[in-house]
View 1 (cartoon, rainbow, N blue to C red):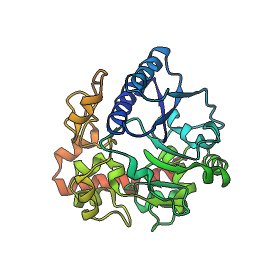
View 2: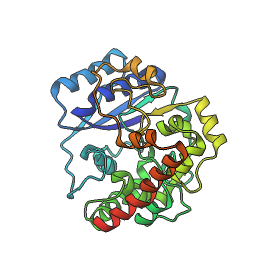
View 3: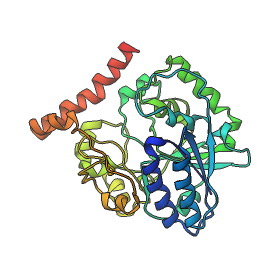
View 4: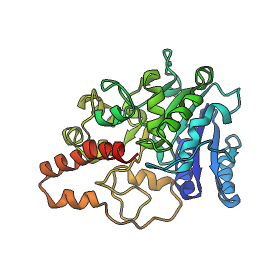
Length: 314
């Protein structure tokens, strides 16, 4: 089973935790890990390599010096995350299918069920994100189409290469002059929304699912044709992949004083230092105003103002 991460030195400790959880929960699987590395120090590489050796797993495959063939103005995330746009080129031709994982992920159970999923003619499988229609309009995605979170992507790399997806991704970046709303996730969705198979949210269980009630999440994010409350509740009973995405209501698990859901599971694998961060400005607004009012106000800013500002400023 081929699995790929992309990281720089800033996220190496978080990556360590993710790989540790992967090895523990999937010891019976034949795992072949690829890491697209952006200037990773020799010391940090050695730590990850030792992790593989200690767990009697295959040697880690490091991919370095990836050149990004365009200029970027980051809307979010880091430059290293854009390297996932070139998986068809940087991974060997023998890799036909690959699971891409963000670093801020803990594997809580076996991935064997995910690897058994059929693609049904699609190129990628993933879990839908809570983007609303305004973001879709900016990206020229039909309002009714689901859009995916790019933190967990199971990819038919053979079909990806056949359909020359990387050329299409570069075209989108150039079309938006290097600034695409939602960063590389926006780029991927703009090209692949029609080649996406939706999976159960248990395969990418995001922080917002825990931080907000279903009703509050829908009010705040205003997604179209999203999972039902029952589907999310069922996924929460058996989480396979826990994704510690950013949410203004909680700190991420490697940040000091975090009480985010499943932080104790993360701490089981984390060996790094805990970072000091300032509270979110959105949280300050949320605490001052009545809950219903704050959700509507912040949702309006998130779903209406931000996409319109992007259109004006890009």
